[in-house]
Length: 190
Image (cartoon, rainbow, N blue to C red; front, top):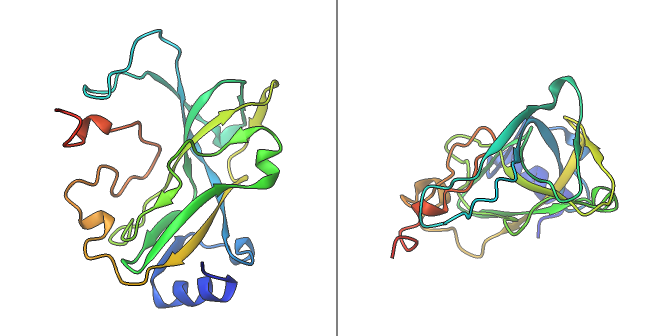
């Protein structure tokens, strides 16, 4: 795992791209990532979601640039980051919640914490966060709040094919929150 000085060195060599970079957000072994303004809040429809078909989830769009969104108990929210990330084929990233956010009962990602080598390297891309709340009370989400932290690991050998170069990658170049594209998995159609 990369330390503060390693993260800065890899930013300087271009192996890690963080745009915009706020140097004060780099900690001893991670960088704080901020919440962007675009949210997709899942609607409760009662419909069964079939991952083998076009995803039928319905979302309400929210823009929190003019004011906070109150995430309610049980909400499922796809959010975006302010930072656009790019990783060379030598580096992988790990997204985690921040302790201060977790203590509010906010879960930052369901299972998608790994940022693959080669992600956003051609064109830095935002990350989609899968937010939910286990707090029994609503909690405000503000644009720009430090919502997560990202750590980095140098691979023992570079990935032969980075994320953006893989023809099966479904989220390359994303610039806002994107719903699931699991129906595009080549194995999901069997």
